[in-house]
Length: 498
Image (cartoon, rainbow, N blue to C red; front, side):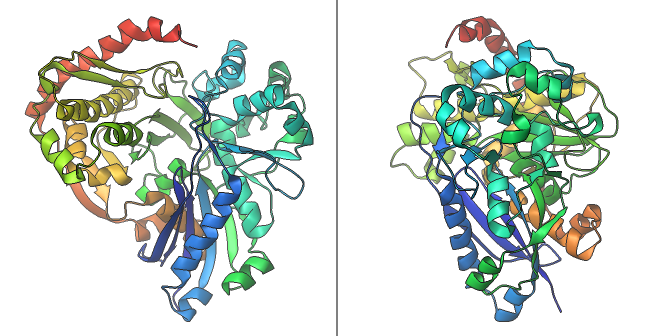
């Protein structure tokens, strides 16, 4: 009898639920969107209760499409979520305030103070915490929302909240703890002297101290949840992780020397290394954050598809997607001298600064809105090329990109990225690698005694391979140099901004 697996991807814009078989074929998948509030520039918030409502609505839509037999044979589930999306909760794990979304940069000052300590634990995250991460945000809440902080039972992440709702267990994933919470397994976990130095001496009281590896059994679904959806009461929930990192399972890049690129609202570049090594301008190395005994390395661009959303919403209203792409295709490489910087919400890597800004350079009266659009496509491609260059320069060669996410549907953009980087890009059949990755982990736990690689080999399948045009690559090299110089010469001015 066939078995099925539930994957849940709680993303920036909504919660997606998929039901897959042991070959990675989805028999149902649905997404329910949730809103984001932007109260002031640099801040982004969500209502945590919307996540749970969205998960249930998406699951209900899935279950309406499958048979009773399939429903009863959903044997395991796994969740991935954005990080660090942070919410204070009471003892019933109900939110006390809006959740601070991962992209929120309000904790810049806290991150600066943390990094000024130069504590040895920072060498496990590329020498710097980001304002996006858990620890700076918890510190911000403690300093700026004292009443909420004092009333909170715990300050948790989106993943913790949804897992608790599903099975009643409050646990943090080693994935988010290692990558966003300054937790280092090989050094005994949290560093007490570090927490005391930054002003979080009460971290054991306020943070989730149970930390589980990806795939760890958390518990059976709650009886209430099983009854509400008429699910098998023996269905289990296993620990997941950060959405981008769980996509590594859905891309089948869970061994060294493969690089996955999650191409969505932001871009995340992920790979695994066998040896611990200190890197500059790269997040990591993270100790066992995805696969035990392997070191996770991470590059990222905080603004990618979100930059195009901004541009389309403001300057292309009324034009179809096809019209925008067709016009951009007609613009020559280099946009007739127009170069953009893609740092609309700061730079994640390699510069690691929240104060970097988006820029258009070289504007002329002959430039059209299509030039401005294509310049953004090229800017994000240059950002990826810069990250790959940084990997290469530090001894981690990148030969091929394995991509997923909504951007992979934009073949013009994919070709530009391939041409700019000079690297081929493989796109798998299932673009929703986060949901599939959760399905892979759930299947590994239920069918393969925790063998993630065996599950991924069975469930992940290649669709197309995009090859770079090396003549175009040569043309882009000069423009890429201009992109690098442009930031280099504006960096000091950008850092002057509050």
